[in-house]
Amino acid sequence: MTPPGPSKTASAAFEERGRRAETLARVSVSAAEPLRFAAGLLRAQAAVAAVLEAAHAAQPLTGRLEADVRRMLGRLLEIPRFAASAGPAPLSDEAKARESEAEDTARTRLLVFWSEDRPAAEDYLSRAMLRPYVEVLRAANVAPNRIHRHGRCPFCGGAPAVACRRGGAEGEGAGRFLVCGLCGLEFAFNRILCPSCFEEDPYRLPTFSSDAHPSVRLEACETCRRYVKSVDLSQDARPLPEVDDLASLSMDLWAAEQGYARIEPGLAGM
Image 1 (tube, rainbow, N blue to C red):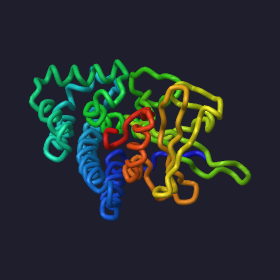
Image 2 (image 1 turned 135 degrees about the vertical axis):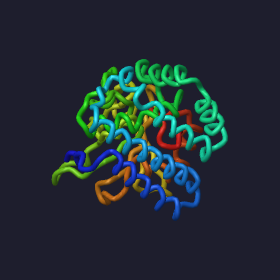
Image 3 (image 1 turned 90 degrees about the vertical axis):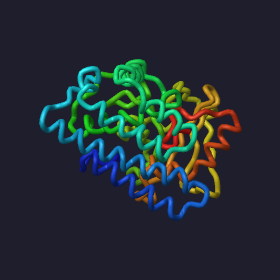
Image 4 (image 1 turned 30 degrees about the vertical axis):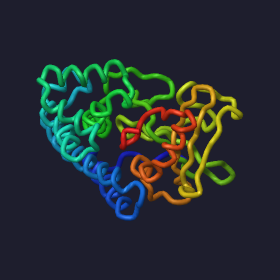
């Protein structure tokens, strides 16, 4: 089974995720705070995406960040502005510093993240700032000029932030899809393969689950000690993997204690 194709604008997709985060925040005990932050971040990204959609309609974006960034930098800075006011202390402090940077420095940071393919663990704010831009490009089918590597998003080259399983045909197991942390694309990926180091020995690819989160599992690799969290959508398609991921942050904390590192941080930056 293939994942659903794009059927809405980028800004509408951000709004949908924001509503899901708000809904989960009302019922979550342990993850209410990160879910509320995510809801606000997604709303801020939705507003930026709406402006970029209008800008693209007037003068198409090129997909070359070095050419597009001057047009949109002021809008992208709304993301660290939100994080400075509503983010947890370490992120808030970093965002305040980003807000006060000179424009040349702010552009350079984004271009370095873009061209050097840095993981969000090293620069969470750059990924958060660029997400509306890349998702607008994806909705408009404008390919970004980024490095593409095996195991990465076929559209933008981003690393997988989360995974999901969707029901296949009768007699087949659920299909495995990775969700890009930079543009949100779901792309099919081999069920028995590490997305980080491409280990394919099933005995070195354990999965871990928790009774507290029965639809979630950690798909780990003993070779590179990396993992991706996977949300089961085969029985219930309502969860949005990037958002529902936040409800099980306790599993990420457990994984860190066991010496595993996430391939790419989720919305909470971990």
